[in-house]
Length: 533
Image (cartoon, rainbow, N blue to C red; front, side, top):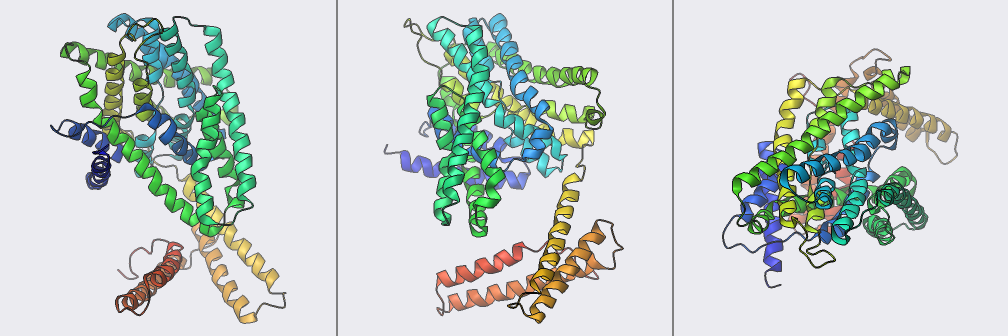
C-alpha cells in the first residue's frame, strides 16, 4: 500500500510520455503502450504491478463497452449485422475449438484446459485496428464491422470460457447446457440492457444538470453489466445494448452544454482507461515469465507461435470461406451490390488483435480444481495468452498501415457525402424556420434579414459543393471569411487573457468567455490556405 501512490503516478506519467512518443512515431498508441509496459516491467528494482482480472472485467470493461456502443451507428451495424454476427459468434466458436485442438494435440493440455485457452484468445480488441483505419481513411464499413465485432464477441467468448473452466474444475461438461447458454446469456443480457437503458432515459429526461448527467452516464454501463453478470447472463451484451439504446435516444435526452462537456469528458476517460489497460498488459511479462521457470525456452516459443498462428489462420479461413458460402447461397441483387472486394476481406482478416479482456480471463483461471489438484497448465495458458496478444497487437498492428496502403484500400467518400447532405438539410431547415419566424410580432426585420442572408449563403455553398448548382466562388469566400473570423476570435482571446494577467478579471470570468469563443471557433471549418497564396 505504501507504493500505491508512486506506482499510480508512474503509470500515468508513462501513459502520457508513451502516448506523445506514439504520436511522434505515428504508431497506434496501444501498441507502443504495450511495448513500453513490457520494457518497464523488465527494469530491475521496480515494484511488481499485477493486473487483477476483476479490475478489467468489472471496473474497466463496462464503461468502455457502454460508450463504444453509445457512439456506434445503429444503421451501419444493422446493415452489416450478418457479417458482424458471423465474426462475433461463429468465428469465436471456430477459434476456440481450433486453438483448443492445437493446445491439446501439440502442447498436451487436457481438453477442458485447451478449450479454455481457445475461448480466452477468441475475442478481439478492435481499438488499435480502428485507430489505424480512421487514420488511413479506410472505408467506413471496415471500421463499423471491426467495432461491431469487438463490441459483441466478448459475450460468447466468456460463455465458452465459463463452460470450459467449469469442466476443468468440476470434471463435468454438458454441450447442451453450453449451447443453451450461448443463446440465453446474450438474450437475457440484451433484455436487461434495454430495461436499464429505458430507466436511465426516464431519469435523464427529468434532469437538467450537466455534472449529474455525466455521472449517470458513467454508471450506466455498470448498472447494466453487474445485474446481468449476477444472474449468469451476458454483462457484455447488457452494457452494449444499453449504450446503443441511449445513443439512439441521446439527442432528446441531453442539452447542448451537456453534450459538449460529456463528449470532452468521455474522450479523456476512454483514453485513460484504454491506455492504463494496455500498459498494464505489458507490465505482466515478468510475472508471466517467473511462473514458467524450468521450462524450455525453444518449446515455449514454439507453442506461442503455434497458438498465435492458429488464431490468425482460423480468422483468414473463416472470413474467406464464409464469404464464399454466403455468395453461393444469397444471390439477391441488394446483396450483390454490397459485396466487399478480396482486398477488404484481407484487411478484415488481418485485424484480429487481442487485448486486455483475453489476459484478464487468463489471469482469472482458478488455481485449483474441486478435487484439490492444480489447474492443468494454468501458468502456460497465461503465457500463451500474453504471447497471442503480443504477436497480434504488435505484428498485425504495425504491419496494418503498410498492408492497407499496399492493397490500395481507400475511403469510399460516403461519409463526406452524408455530412454534406446533412449540412444542406440543416441550412434549408434554418431558412424555412426563419421565414416562419418573420411573421411573429417579436422578431425584428433587420435580424430576420441578417440571419436569412447568412443561411442562404450557407445553403448555396453546400449546394455548390454537392454539384447541385455552379460554384460561384463560394469555397474561396468561405475560406477567407473563416480565416478572418479566427483572427478576430484570437484577438478577443488575447484581450481577455491580457485582462486576467493584469488582475482586472478573475480566472473564472476568463474561462467563461474563452469557452464561448472556443465554441464559436469549433463551428468553423478548416479555413485552408490564405486567398491568393
